[in-house]
Amino acid sequence: MPVYSDKVMEHFMHPRNVGEIENPDGVGEVGNPICGDMMTFYIKVKDNRLADVKYKTFGCGAAIAVSSMVSEMAMGKTLEEAMKITPRTVADELEGLPQNKFHCSNLGAQALHKAIQDYRGKKKGGK
Amino acid sequence: MRKVYLDNAAATPLLPEVREAMLPYLGEVFGNPASLHDWGDKAREAVESARIQVAQLIGANPEEIIFTGSGTESNNLAIKGLALAQQGKGKHIVVSAIEHFSVLHSVQTLGKWGFEMTLVPVDKYGVVDPEAVRKSLRKDTVLVSIMQANGEAGSIEPIAEISKITRERNILFHTDAVATAGTIPVDVDELGVDSLSLAGNQFYGPKGVGVLWVRKGVRIMPFLEGGVQEGGRRAGTENVPAIVGLGKAAELARVNMSARLKQLTPLRDRLLTELPARIDHVVVTGHLKQRLPGHASFCIEFIEGEAMLMLLNSQGVAVSSGSACTSRALKASHVLIAMGIPHALAQGSILFTLGMDSNAQDIDYVLEVMPPIVDRLRQMSPLYAKFLKTGKGGK
Image (cartoon, rainbow over all chains, first blue to last red; front, side, top):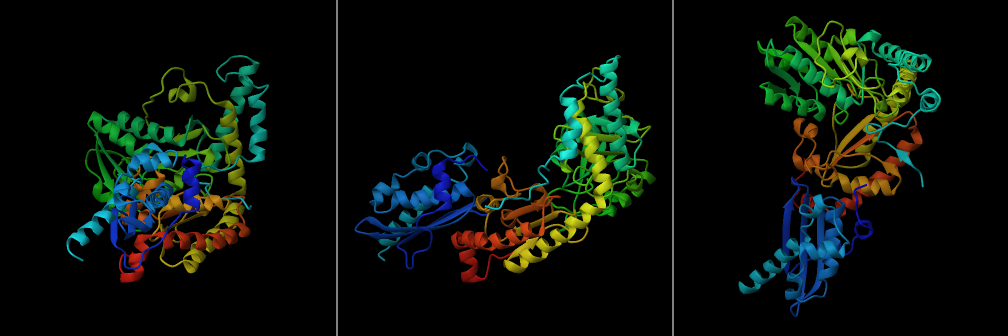
């Protein structure tokens, strides 16, 4: 087995908030299957807060655990708070990630930020 | 929970008979085979009788057997040792694109000393075309190295056909038989090669010992120098217990080979047929027939190998994968890529290698636990969601 923390293993075995949101307010997709990991985050926003966060992830154990952790960290947060979630804070919450997985599998925060930017862009566009 | 070990390409269990044969050499028989007294004689006799056992496995002469520390060392010694001994004649080496890194990296290192390499491609089944080897030969080609079977692809290469070509041209031919020797019949004269690597941990012997066979009369430059062990071709005090274990494992492999083949082949075929029948969008990798007896490999679309491997492990099943995430370098297996498998599909690589402890219940168990694991990961996969919506993104 890869050297994963108990927390990573727990999130990998029991990932939270997996799925898609019908008519999401924002969508963020990062990565590609060629490099190994790909994540799509879906958000629902209410009163400037993340009312719902879901995702789909293609990738290794770390990628799945990262997605799960990001969704948990982001749920209910204001958009500003959610933008402060970083790969480092996600890895810390997961009690560490193997060094070689830190960059390639730790895309969850980026995908979430993209979903929030997508939402903001749509709002600006008057939708 | 049921425990099912299907990673025999990585390591096989040590047979009890092999362990028994080794034990005296981890205890009272501790002499150095080079010593000129009774203690030394006993150790030397053990090494020499192991040499005969290994020679018999591959139809060789005992004096042509060089004991090394691993299959990797054997390949390093063959590639570097044969090429350097021939460099007066030329500096061109031909290897297949799916060779083990112990061969590929050795050839790359020789590049620093002016050697050039031609990589021969494989077809989608991972098989080398002998004519492609013929076309790659040059006036200055001094060495060809094509493995007998790749442990990942599982396909068996047409070594005897290729050696006809190298012999016409008087070019040395090395084959890496680590995945085949002790598993399927291997005879150095039938293969027509000049050197061959094998390792005992592929056929229920100990780790830490390998063999390079070099045909009598072929010059090889040693790179471990010191004493005159192994005819001066590999210096260093012999790992006597491991060599004894390898010898015993070789003898048992030779005697029991047809029984082992009969046990493994139907189990393999059941897995190769049934897994794609029970799970959609599964590709068998490697050749279906011309294949190692215990080897079943697949690419499962839309999901990634490490996640599959971890969920299988949680169900007591040990397998391996050639996905990028499972490799330390985070690169998809060069073998799968050489077979023309797209990077995204290669991520779903999964490899089952059966062994003599495998039985029908193990295969039933795998066929039972695999579909829900694949389903679970696909439910999570954005690639699968896209495929369901658009019908695109499939292989």
